[in-house]
Amino acid sequence: MKRGPVQKWVAPGRVNIIGEHTDYNDGFVLPIALPLVVECFAVVNGSGQVRVGSRQRPREPVLVAVGALAAERDRVPAWSRYPLGVVSEFVRRGHRIAGVDIELDGAVPIGAGLSSSAALSCAVAVALRDLFAPMVVDRELIDIAHAAENDYAGAPTGLLDQSAAILCTAGHALFLDVRRCTDPDDDGAHEQIPFDLDRFGLELLVIDTGQAHELVDGGYAARRAQCDAAAAELGVPALRDVETVDALERIADPVLRRRARHVVTENSRVLTVAEKLRNGVDPRSIGPILNAGHASLRDDFEVSTPALDVAAAAAVEAGAHGARMVGGGFGGSVIALVDCERTAAVADAVRNRFARAGFADPRTFVVVPGAGAHRVD
Image 1 (cartoon, rainbow, N blue to C red):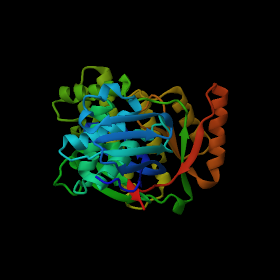
Image 2: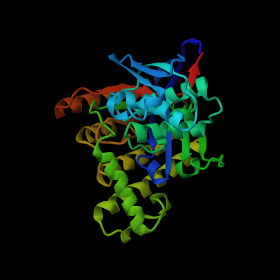
Image 3: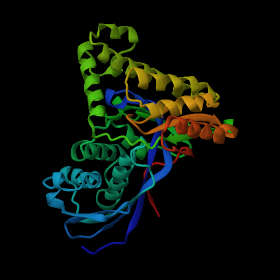
Image 4: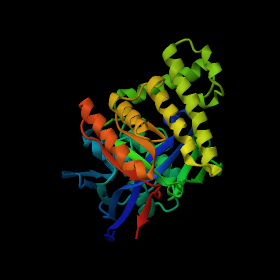
């Protein structure tokens, strides 16, 4: 096959306005795509081999025969399992991949809870779709990227990250009903809700603590198992099906009860925030809900860290309307909803508190809702 031209695709990281650890419980989430993206430069090579390189790892290119992807999984570098897993999943589903060169470059901070791995996987997924399988629809693309991360890379994520990377649109938050999005015949599984903070004189500040989290570690998988155990004890398919916290009193184990309480209350918070934004109310009103979400992740789900707690508390004390950790936890970032004229002061206050606590200087930046994965012409 003749070698084609190199083309470029991008996929964004994401932050959740609200809705952590609800996706693998068949619940609700409300993310926005970040303007920070992973870039995928790809070209058909026709050689029957996949070559993957990364500008963040210039001395570690990986070359694997398409037919050997499954067998080589445990022998390739961990970082390369995300893009190679996407290729492997396309092949497993019967799509013919004639060979491809992939070069990656990422601006999404790794380990910051901003879904850098999903951005990488989805950038590769949209490239492979456009190059080899144009009949693949967005819903299957999400499933391909999700399976690649779960089965090939060994990261037990839910569907949130990949859905956000593919489906988000600029200027909007994505309301996603995870249970419904797994039904190929359900067209009402997601909704684009306008999220224009500038109209109200607000900004969304991200505070990257610099403490990286790693989803292939045991804490995230343990929380998933605990949620499954709580649902089984209640006799429901998933914690999504529990309507009130009163029903949780039937759970004997206090740890499982706390885990379930987070999921049930977080689903309620997502629905409340989505309704407020849908109705165009002043987003300042969601500030207390963000604070409640952080407290729940800290106390009931126990995935926060001292640095995340300090960042959230310092931001609110400095005038943020609400702040909470984002992502899987055990490190990562905090978001804070702030008045535009207070953004610098809030960022400075967090830095000062970090210095007094002996933490490394955090990275702070403002984000607006970006576009989902696409080819760059």
